[in-house]
Image (cartoon, rainbow, N blue to C red):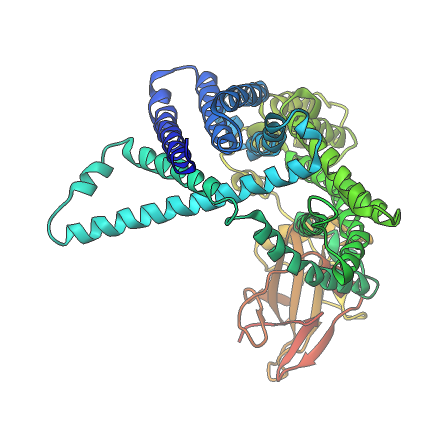
Length: 583
């Protein structure tokens, strides 16, 4: 068979597989749920079918049809059974799918396992050969990216053709697209054909291009990370431990660094970077443990303050993985000779390790809901107030383990505030949303905020009952924020009193408080007589908007890292963020 005939056969085969995949997925998503009453069986069929065709289309080309089909069946069935096993943590599969961690673990398991399967099918023991794994992984990424781009182009042409023919009254394309499976069929056909064409042109559409482009970013990230590390002693660590967002940023930065270092080490020493780029790569590998360890520490502190939730379990595991990656890379570089080879070996073992973690996430070993419930119950036993327990989440989001945890919480009859705890659990069960639950807990009255909200500048004072005319919601949120502890032992609230507008006959105040761990509210207040009057949120000088703030700004103010400056009115300047009451 000539090369041209072989290419034509490959195009036909992959286009056919893509078309079958499209029709099958249409049936799985749109037809089967109406015919099969067992929801878990539907979930197994949809997950298994999606996984099968996703894996099969990734394998075809480098791998022959028969072994590719068999491997796709084995991998998709195994992953789908794990997903179904995990779904029994919930009464309804729909509730299970609302927690995206399980679907992400399922997808990650498949995505990382496919290159190992493909390498093993191309060559005996190929899953152990890093060069083959590297080429296979990047080739799959490039093939899928190019093929989906082709699908988008095909749909663009179809829509443009439909619009053009519509100008002369021809609606044939509209009629075809109204046939239910047709969009699925067209998308699958285009995807299969695109994959076949990309496979034919593998010498021209090479992952080496993407790798070379990514390498250019390595020195940039090195400089940025270096500046970040140098600024840490000056800025302090308080801003890193205020919430999930900072930890998430550090994890993403660490993952980007790991990816860029991997592209620099490449598949073997012949393709690896040399000269100044090798020096930059080693420097980045030595610096990457800093954001990775900080991310892990930030997650650890947050869990210590508020206990486990499924989000925090996932975040802690992600942070632990990047720490191990970063330390392995740094260790490879510190060993000097052969650092790139050691780094590649670490990559292979770490990839296998993350596959195992993704699989364990879908088993009782890493049952995030059960671990979270145990943490929250332990906090309840320790006497944590009901408002600081994840009672609504246990009721509505953590499945069977969550509801069992509520029963254990109600059994804590020895607590002095047991009646309040019972009331909070009842409210959690009846509230339709977290907002409704929290609002229900806010029905009580706050006696006073006198001597509770810290005042700045030092020596500032307020008349007794200054806060009493503010809304119950604002006073309650301030009260709860002041009871919450930020890193360094500071309360999560502060008020800065000043003559922001010297033309006004009364002073004004800006109060910053964190009613929730990831949220900072800022209010502008007028001190008229001996009572505060709320004037809404302040604005940022020069922009008129309100910038997003993190709890660390409260720590900055409490520790004196602010000033009152005139531009031309007086403003509260916190590290370059200039706040002033609205006119």
